Amino acid sequence: MKDRKNYKEELRQWAFANGMSKFGVAPVDRFGEARRGQKPEDLLPGAKSVIVMCIKLLDGATSAIYRKYEDGMDDVHGIYGTYGYTLGPTFHQAVVVSEMANKIEMETGELALPSFTGGPLVNGGAFSLRHAANAAGLGEFGWNGLMLTPEFGPRNRFCAVITTLELEPDPMYHGPRLCNPEQCHICVDACPTGAITMPGTIPALEVHCGDKTSAYCALINHKCKMACHTIVKAAGGKEDLVSLDASEPEVEHVLDTKPFEKEGMQGNPTWRCGQCLTNCPVGNWKGHFYDTGLVDHLLENKKQEETTIEKEPEQVIAALGLPEIKGDGR
Ligand code: SF4
Ligand code: SF4
Image: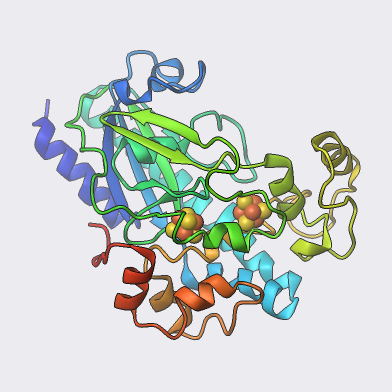
């Protein structure tokens, strides 16, 4: 058997050589709060470690979201759907986790089970990759409920390999606080349907993992669905198929009876909002999207304008109470 410490480093380097942006290891005892059927040992009996990786989303693909909100070009948003959501990162990660699991089984004789987002192929998507990334110390939860990494903010996709191989765990993320929703709340302001509420409005969701407690907004799921499926004009829909204060059953009824779309592989696309992902300032938003000209202006998001535009990165960091993070995550 190979030396465990060296082998972890070998896997890390292999992940980076295969296009991954971050790598961490969580021991299975950090998943104590996961529901039955979603714990690593439920999926792979005898599991000891979860290797978690992320891929940074392409700035170009992410910026396509702005085209719909700035210019009304709904079709262009599909570029994000393809290269930021369903196909690009998903298929890439499917190959990487499958090959890594194969490498572990061949080289160590231990068992390894790949897990990735699923995208259009949702078989076996029970494992929460956001929570796995938290457990592996890759970042911390933002108020928007997304996993923020210091380097890329919420603009990541995660994948994992659950294995019976015992690897040295990485510490939980204890770097500078990334999200301060009382000061920032850009995701609340940017959310077109009110799915993300201001801190203190409704009880937050708490997560206890390792030596860390996190809290994030209890998303109003059916309001998020209204936007992600564009069944309201506020989120760029062609017509209001429900009102913004519609109940969950009303929204579900519209989604259940909505005809399949003829274009694209996903008959019922789920990626047509993403405002909480594109507008979060963590991960040097200004450098990636404003200074580069990828976003011209931010309609109705005065908070982002006040805090981010026209300011140098140091001023944004000070205004939002964010840490300055450099590097590419390696
Ligand atoms: S937009 Fe602001 S409040 Fe929302 S998750 Fe990002 S840093 Fe936190
Ligand atoms: S995807 Fe859109 S609707 Fe859903 S929480 Fe994010 S901003 Fe709100």
